[in-house]
Image 1 (cartoon, helix red, strand yellow):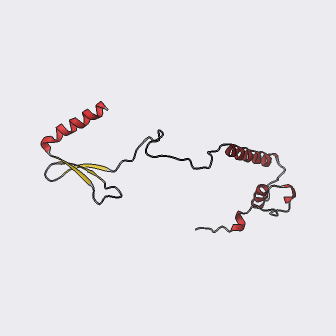
Image 2: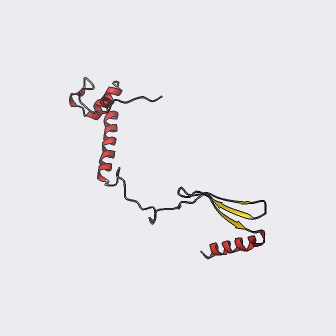
Image 3: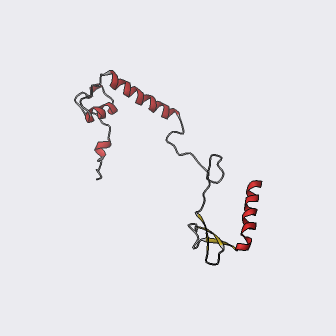
Length: 133
């Protein structure tokens, strides 16, 4: 079940509680949701101090909350590049079929057919290239 939130519920304004004379809007919201909390208690003040510390740290970090320009083609932080789904199986003729899923702009999958008499040569050549780097 989805609950709708009104703009009034998102506003931080004065007057949420009868104890609002010396409270920040954040404190007022907390007290409006949990009126049993004592705003003078050491625990409440300690929790607000933690929130203030986090807010200051985020404000001091220019990258916090901001989108950083990122290049998916040549950034050194990329660990795995995109890889299409690839299958290997035999057809009725006994050929080794290597099939790659079509990309978004292609109409059909890509196929490589390796005849049984060339299979070992093909696989050994692939392994050699991998070892050579």
